[in-house]
Structure formats: structure tokens, C-alpha cells
Length: 248
Image (cartoon, rainbow, N blue to C red; front, side, top):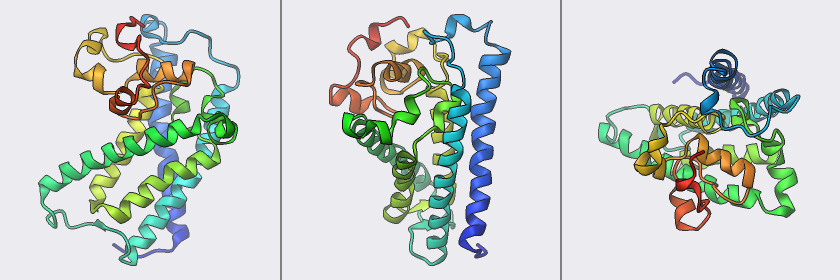
């Protein structure tokens, strides 16, 4: 890998992060709210109309978050160039099987990290300056998926900084985890349920977090803190007891 300056990496990653956000979140909003909105009305999870100006506020926070994530990414690559991280580029260094294992491990670690910091963010003493921005639009849209206050964006970004120093990861694995994170965040903030209603009775609805599961969090605040999986919510009693029996 050719070495560049920190700022080269920063501006490159800032552009990539913004492009990823507008492509995935914007594409989902365009499809579900503007193109297919009326035909998918029966799949809508919204109980209230979209708040005036909420999309603009979410985009503003998301751009701020992109700055933070780009700084974190530029730091990771700069440290990799110095040989300080455990990132690697030789796909055969640990074997193909390790790509799969490490990818799953990163998702589990991130879900665990997110669950506990998310619960902390909702503590009354710090909620207003750590996490309020993500909830100020009321019921979410795809634009809400990356809308974080500055302190929260920093804490979110530090996960990938930390994991790059403690878990050997191929760059493919790291990029795949980032893409999955973006897509999954848009899915859970979609405002439309894309899983079939029967999914609550199988492993998809019971163990994976979808739009319905996360929309309950945006209404009740004190339940459903996970990112990808429902494991921690079930284990620690923060899953809404009516979730699996709720038809909406």
C-alpha cells in the first residue's frame, strides 16, 4: 500500500463515507418514501407523520459523524502504515476460513460494544448531550441511521480503532463490516418492515434486529438496545415483552 499523508486519507475517507451514506440511506428513502410509499402503506411502521425539518437535521448530524469516522479511519490507516495495527492485506496469511470467522467475530464484538454504550447513552444525566440528536426526529427514517451527536460519533468510531489493534483483520473484512453496519442501520431505521410477519416465529425475527424491533426503541427508549442481534436484550431483560406477540 502506498503511504500518503493523514489528510489525504481523511479527505478520501470523508468522501467515501458521505457517498456511502447518501447512496444507501438516500436510495432507501427515495425508494420507500417517494417511489413506493403509497403502495407499501400497509408495511409502514410510522405512527406519526414525518416531523418538519427532521430529514435536514439528520443529514447535518450525519455529515458531522462522517467527519469523525473519517478521522478514525485516517488514523487506522496511518497506524497501519507504521505497522502498529493488526490489519493485513495477504489473504492467505490466516487462510480463507479466518476471513469468515473474523467477520462474524467483529459483528458480535460490535453488537456487544454497541449494546452497552447504547444503554449508557440513555442514562438521563448524559442523554441530552450524548444521544439526543439521534432521537430528536421522533420516529426514524433512513436518514437517521448515521445521525449522531459529536460525543456519540466519537465513541462509535472508537470501536473500529480499537478492534484494529486487538483483532487481526484483513482489509476486506474491515470494509465488509463497515458496509454491513451501514446497510443494517438503514434497515433498522427504515420505517417499513421488510421481513415477513411470520419471521417473528423463526430465528430471523427472534435473533436479528429489524425495523419493527428498533422502531420500538425509538418510541419507548428503555428497551431494544442492540445493533444486529437480540441476544443481549433477551439475556439482560431489555426486550419488550410484547415484541414477539405484537402484530405491528
